[in-house]
Image 1 (cartoon, helix red, strand yellow):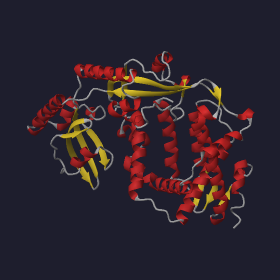
Image 2 (cartoon, rainbow, N blue to C red; image 1 turned 135 degrees about the vertical axis):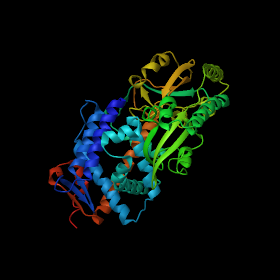
Image 3 (cartoon, helix red, strand yellow; image 1 turned 90 degrees about the horizontal axis):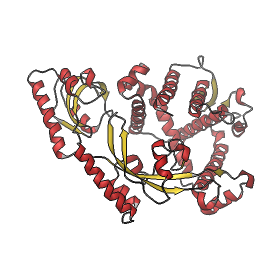
Image 4 (tube, rainbow, N blue to C red; image 1 turned 120 degrees about the vertical axis):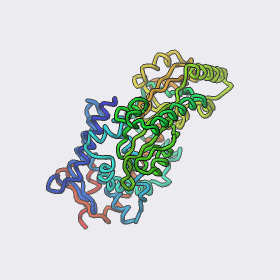
Length: 457
């Protein structure tokens, strides 16, 4: 799914979600009641629409709306039991999750301003709209975690699970690859930082001498999201910007300019236009230290030597990742790439990035590629050029599932089955403690049977 499609899906879902807060039982049909919580038809339709979009034209399997309602009933049941068990979610946990979600949406749109313009709501208003929903979701998740705490499957249980699969039902796996990488980017030198610092000090001196802050931002700021608007960042609140920036901004008086502030993005001048309690209206000017062609050559030489050490087995792949790789996402996953389609470390060849497939076709399992140029655009829109070495960790042939080569997948399936069994037991044990009513329109859903009888208290 490309970025445009992602934005369209999330936009539609968020708009529908925001509208729920303005609805009442007369405007949207109540499909189910679980304790003090209701499930609206629109909640089911939002998830149904999202699944349709994610399927990208492929037909959805099974009775999707029944499955969605079953999951919603379970979430509400978790929430009801969490309240009965007096589970608590702190405000810090709620704020952290709100920040995470809002920042994710902002990354989809490219900036806070574009997101706010699209939805017609400020970040603060969006957070206020979603606070109760986030709190309830976190309580539900905490209850679910409590139920599954300590649940494991033993090797014997995995074997028994696999032995009970009928021969004709054993899944067939296409050829799959596990791919690792070591990525390196040029590092900004002290000299390059000093050049950026001096440039911003000159801008600061000009402003103190009477030059207009906004005009200087338009002329010189290297923040693509705010430069053309005179450095305007709009109204922000704590948690929206990096800590180094906020620590200075919140100490400034109105209409005062900061000294130079260093953050991971570069050097800033900050101007506070207005203080509104815990909210600030800000402008800034950003100057980024630049890496040079010589820095890129130095990185190429360094990664060439690492590739050689890997190829002659004087360094392990894991050691190279831990000591040298600059890609945090793969570094935290042992250097392995994650398939965005399945969120697993396994790729069918059709899922591999086209820029890599020809390289991988020439490689054998356990070997390394030559050093390859690599470009990456981060969520701020900044393009980073560097190099990487690819590692082909494994490649399976098309085959029927077996315990030798597919143990982790079979173990995962066995664990899911055990979790489902535990959930069904938990529902049977606890549904009598909570009032549950389901609309007759869903009475023929097979998966609703486990909820039957819950409303006869």
